[in-house]
Length: 288
Image (cartoon, rainbow, N blue to C red):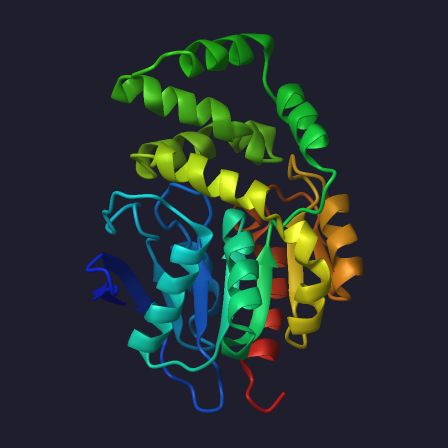
């Protein structure tokens, strides 16, 4: 693995990682993590495919090893990715987005379709209506005591480190279909994906609502590269039906992995890995 800091045009230094190797006649992959407001966590996903091609990851500005303060916009983050592609020396890449990273990949495709050779979306984006079903599933997956405690912690203006870990664990445990392991997985994420950039989260979610991808579905379909695929988990609190609706609108393949939640590589590694590798193998090929 090669770790490197790449400087953007405004002086912001973005932390990046590169695994795998250059393979003749194959496009590289760039992974886009979700959040918004958390650092990259997709190393395990990169490990599934980096024997097939070159794989890049990065901490989005304002997260992890890419410190920055300022107003977050979709356009700024799209511009960052374009600059990273230039720095890596790639004209075209296959984008692999997860969760909110699928939205960012979609916005990048709208802005720079000529640079997107392939698109693999994991656990998103979700076509409305989906939020009410998600909220109902989240509530059903928490005990009454857990919900009361989450509400208490949410009302605290400045949480201690221990309180923040508990708050994030209670927030994220509903992402997992395997209820026996959900707490441990959520706790592991809460301990490592901090600090959360809450300003970034608020600003980018507001930007997404102001200019939703739903209003650009026709444009996305026109720009969608051949072989694009959406991969979701049947046990995600966010309804798989919303992914299927989007797939129908985009005329692209949708793979729903049984027994998997929002992070399908955790709960169904074999099935998810097979689906991801097949999609990467197909889309990175310059001969396909």
